[in-house]
Image (tube, rainbow, N blue to C red; front, top):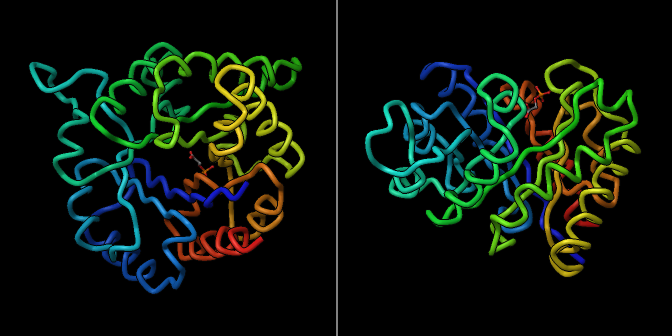
Length: 253
Ligand code: PGA
């Protein structure tokens, strides 16, 4: 099964027009065949339009979040229909920072997956265990629970990427070992196989996130079930080009 690698740059709440101009110029000099790897950039929502105009057409601009509700009296929200209207076709959903700081439960995540699909968007759904869960040997159980929660929201699996992001690895410099990532991705794929279908499980892209850098991306991308990355800190630096390169090499395997 050939799965096209997917690599996301999550800029989180960072940057300015000036810094994004510099970063976009650097990224635009990356050479790769856009039909072999999806490269998705998620700037803060107020900069989505700016970044669309700065990046070349090979990059896919993505939202970091989507409102659970649609258009209407929902102050401060950005609806799926608005994203679609702006030609933004991808959104992250359930990033651990949203789960931990903004109260996004598995059920909110499931609702957002449904909302995104209803607006015709593609979603990168983030899951991952916290350190205490890993230390208690509960990683597999937590991942299964997080996947099972949003399965009923999906009718078109070609619109879903799953990002496995162990919370203890996000922004900490403590990356999962390639074996830890592979093992988690196997659990996620098996959960999809058992509860959706083996065809969907084989086709769905599962990417790793958590302290991915130019130094560790090659060995992670060499694992059979690591279909790409969701990158935070390193996506704000020129080294993101090297991480795209690791996915390009994976596409050639
Ligand atoms: P990090 O963040 O690469 O800075 O660890 C990853 C993420 O939050 O998606």
